Length: 437
Picture 1 (cartoon, helix red, strand yellow):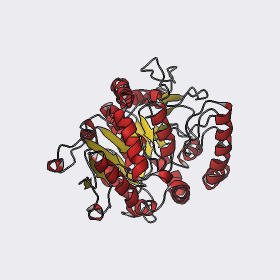
Picture 2 (spheres, rainbow, N blue to C red; picture 1 turned 45 degrees about the vertical axis):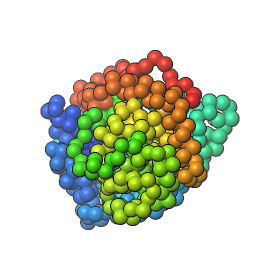
Picture 3 (cartoon, rainbow, N blue to C red; picture 1 turned 90 degrees about the vertical axis):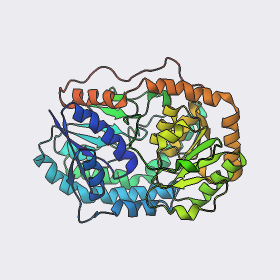
């Protein structure tokens, strides 16, 4: 039995996949402990995973919800810059405590979310073996694919590569506080600098494991041998969530989720509701913890607006998914075989939306241009052209062959328990690549 520590950000979208992976590892008699702020404790302990609170003075209970409410005011570059500033401050605050408590925890290794700014560097400083877990899209850069954080279609031409290069320069400028934070910490700890042009944050040389299925990624040419496409960690069934099913009135169902972090956009949700009403559909709109459901009482088309919804169950009943292109929601949509309209708001969502379109799963509406008319046009395209439903069902079949948590657990054990790195690089489900749609 091994003891693994976990470093993750305090957001539901990252926590839930880690807990699903933890369950698989615990079934193999491993012990897991999350080192995190107080807001994580209830969910972590409810899942039977160990918990060690850090940063209690700086991040008391409720800190995450206050940050989420602040993020809801932003979109695009402004949201990303606010996210970066918050992460830098959090990393600098928690690093000294982690350097002190991790060596005393009796750990055999660490599982570190790729967006934990200093996690990899802390592990290196302490000579603790670690595995990088990519809950969101991997941040590995390549000159032939668009950077994660920009709203730009995949364009495999010299012009596309030229545009990607210019975008990368802008992103590195926007992420300069993050990169400077990491490089400064590494220098303080006597570690060599890392190369942000290879991957935005440092990653493990032992294993980098992604929830993203290979069939959903763009054609990559420079991934390290340690990289693994595992597939979604979450179990296809979900915890029961109360929902007013009696309010569903028989019209075709559209599940419209703008995520839990950057979702406080009344005008956008109103445009979605108007487009659904014009299509003769009924929308279900989860708005996340802390959202005021009463604020949306006047939306047209009688949508069902709730804080949380049983997403996977409702997707199985839906004709269409409208999504912010958060990876977890997109993966649930593929699992349900539902075509999509993606409206990415910020952070890594544009990169995931690009992959949705490339795989033939749906259309993308730029957040800056999102209106009732543009959303309605995208919905009509996706719902009236059979190719989108056919591709959704095709990739649903591929998804059903994946067991991401088991695949990831196997690689974690190989990297941290047996110290024998396997030669298998990825799990290939389909021989064909998605075509342009």
